[in-house]
Figure 1 (cartoon, rainbow, N blue to C red):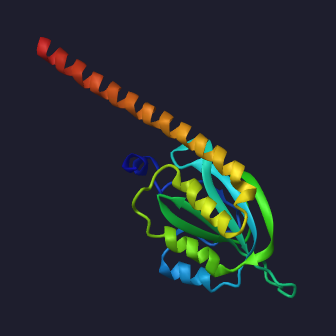
Figure 2: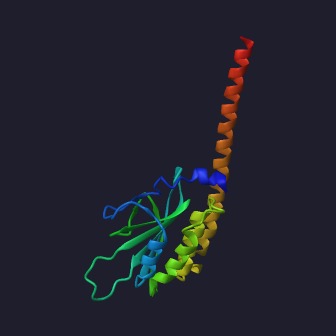
Figure 3: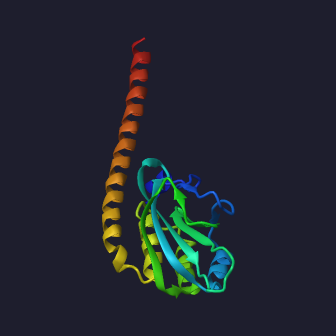
Length: 198
């Protein structure tokens, strides 16, 4: 939906990351996908509902955080990969799973670690997506990642309710824009009328 592409601007952040971060969001491309595919895997999933890019009052934007798999003898601190769809697919790495100004929907410790290539397959489907981008993409992408982790049933109710909320917000946003356009048109028409009378 082209109108929604105007509403959702990827230049706006969906929320502030935790303090221990490694830089800003980066677009997901073939290089990023190859790196994810080569990883041993991920053993924990966090799902957040963050503010929508153009509406801080609506925490409906979905951010998935995956913890890189840790081994018993691994002395390194775990790393976390943030994934989200903001008109385009972006990722971010950090040393903690916290997302400020967002609601933690659920956390799941995966009984069996998910291989990197399983996540990479989802990223490959989404990274160059330019058609049919609409207000529901944030939910659809997150749900695809969740499904790749074998947790679709666990999050089914959440995503069903989320789509209803996103549809309601989108209709409100369209009406707000319509009213703005009417107000502008009325102002212009009034100005023309005044000039004509004078």
